[in-house]
Image (cartoon, rainbow, N blue to C red; front, side, top):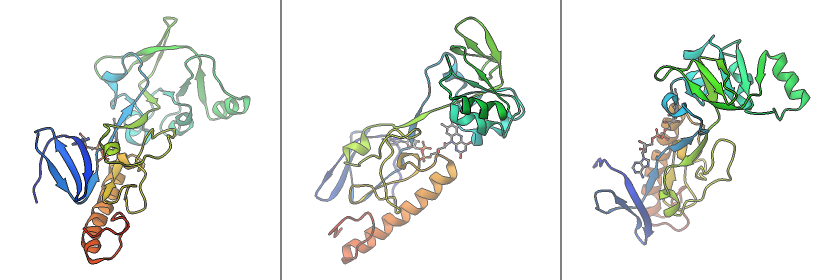
Length: 240
Ligand SMILES: Cc1cc2nc3c(=O)[nH]c(=O)nc-3n(C[C@H](O)[C@H](O)[C@H](O)COP(=O)(O)OP(=O)(O)OC[C@H]3O[C@@H](n4cnc5c(N)ncnc54)[C@H](O)[C@@H]3O)c2cc1C
């Protein structure tokens, strides 16, 4: 086995399988490819978010909620407001302008103790990677120690598309996750995908688990296809 570092810049398919072109100018051929390329997490382009991303501004209450428990928290993601009440009694939903909320939804939020702030957001501020307040376009601000924001996950490059992999329909979280079956086989025979790139619920444990299964399926398809047996991901009639 050889472990190579570097970015796979481009790729394609030929009669033997796949051809990948790493950044060092070489060529790598393979009968199977397992894409574990992750996703780019895109968040709203608000002033001050980038410096605090993954620290005091975050997308996942399970990843960051404990560190910010019992602090005043703001949420720029309607779906996350109720969930965040598991970590703090001081949660405010930011609507960034007049709230598009039904009276029923407003009642549910208020019943859960979630405040609703309809001011237009300018950005966030605080020393270093910390957060002390959300600022508004009218010059006012709201003190808070953590901000939950909505993100969408996008493929980091066109590599999967170059290899012919089909994506699932865009959803609220994944913009273009790769379509895979239960064995993490994509729509292209011999091409597998795992982790965030394959639309698995984003977490380290899920990425590892899906990679573990996908790797086993790669080995299975490599050992069964040449013997005339079918395995998920090998593709119809595969003999290599
Ligand atoms: C800010 C933040 C905080 C998080 N906190 C947590 C947490 O606390 N707990 C938790 O369980 N999860 C957390 N997650 C989610 C978790 O990080 C992901 O679900 C997980 O890392 C996905 O693993 P992956 O292997 O699919 O992708 P990644 O971890 O993104 O790894 C993909 C790798 O592939 C490389 N790559 C991409 N394209 C190419 C290419 N063309 N050629 C070569 N290499 C390439 C990338 O550089 C990267 O190193 C967090 C995510 C974010 C953004």
